[in-house]
Image (tube, rainbow, N blue to C red; front, top):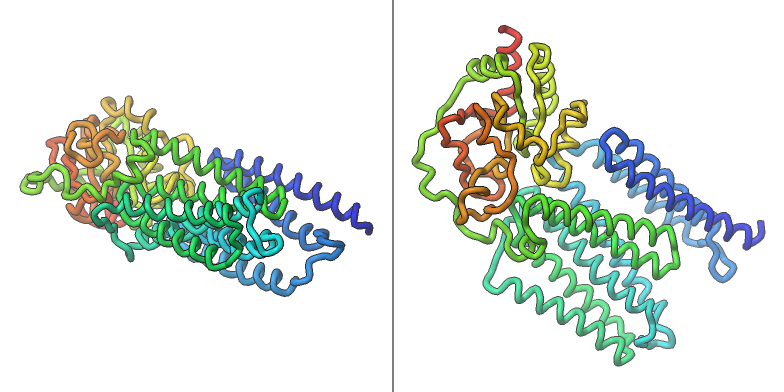
Length: 470
C-alpha cells in the first residue's frame, strides 16, 4: 500500500472519529441517549488509535515503539476497567477528578517530551509558534493535573480546605512568574531544559494552591473548570502533532467544560471569580449562628409513611447523603409504591447537588428512575406551594433558606430548591451536623419541618414497609 493511500486512510479515519466525538457529545446531553453517545465516541477513539498505529508515517517510517504503546494500552485498559467496575456511586466524583487529572498529566508530559523537538538548532525563537503552544499546554496540563488530584483528595475526605493570608496574591504571583519565564525563554532564545522544568514545577504548585481553598458547594464548579483545562491542554497537544482528531477532541472537551462551568455559576447566581476567590469554606464560621439551641421535631417512619400515603403530591430532593447510603434503589421502590396509591411523585434536581455536575441524575438513572420525573430547580420551585410533602434525603445546602433571606450567610444569593414553601417538609439525616458547606440550615428548625434520623437507606426501607402495611 502506497504512503499516499495510507495517509488518506488516516485522514478519513480522523474525520470519522471527529464526527463520532461530536455526535457522542450531543447525545450525552440527554439521559436517554447518554450511554449510546459514550459508546459511539469510544468507537471513534478506538478507530483513531488503531489507524494511527497502522498508517501513521513520519519521514517515510511508521511507528516503531509498538511494544510500549501496546503495553500502555493494555495496562491502562485494565486499570480503567477495574476502577469503573468497582467504583461506588459515592466515589464517582473522585474517579472523575482522578481521570481528569490523568488527562492533564498526559498533556503536560507531551509538552515536556516534545520540547527538544521544537527547539531548532538548540534555540527557542519568538516566532516559534510550536514552542508557545507547548508552553501553554505544559502550564494548563500541569495545573489541571495538580488541581484534579487535590480535588480528588478533598472529595475523598483526605485533604481539608486550606487558606492562608494573601493566598490569592501568592497564586497570582506564581502565575505571573510562570508567564514571565516563558516570555524570557522566547525573547532570549533559551533552550536549556532547566527552564521548562522550572515552569513545570511552578505550574504544579499553582495547581495545588489554586484548588486548596475551594470547597463546599463550589466543588462541582471547580471540577467542571478543571475538565475544561484538560480539554484545552489536549488541544494544544493536537497543535503540536498536527493531529486533527486530538485537536477536535480537546476543543470539544474544553468548550463543553467551559459552558458547563458558566451554566453552573449562573445556576448558583455566582460569578466564576467569586467561586475561585470567595469560596464558601474560606468565609469562616457557620451562618445562622445561635440556631443550634433551637429544638427540632423528630418523627417516626410510621408518621412519615401515613403523611406521604395520603398526600396528593410528593417531591423528593436527593443529595449527597442519598449517594452515601446507596439508597437510590430503595427511593425508586418507595416512589413506585406511592404512585400505586395515586400520589404524584417528582424528584427535584439542584444543579450542584452532590459532588460533581449531574451527580444526582446519574445516581437516579442507575436505579432506573424515569427521566421525566427528574425536574430541574427552576421548574420545580413554582410547584412547591402546592406540594403536600417534600422529602429531603441527604441534602443540606441546596435547600437552605438562608441563601434567600440571610445576607450574612456565605451562600446568600445562591438559588435553592424552595422546600420551605411546601406544606410539610421531612428531612432524612443521620444527625444534625451541617452540610458540605459547613453552615447551619434554618429549615431544620421551622414548624412545618420534621426530622427522620438514621441511615437514608434504612429509613426508606422502613417507610416502604409501613406503606405496604397501610
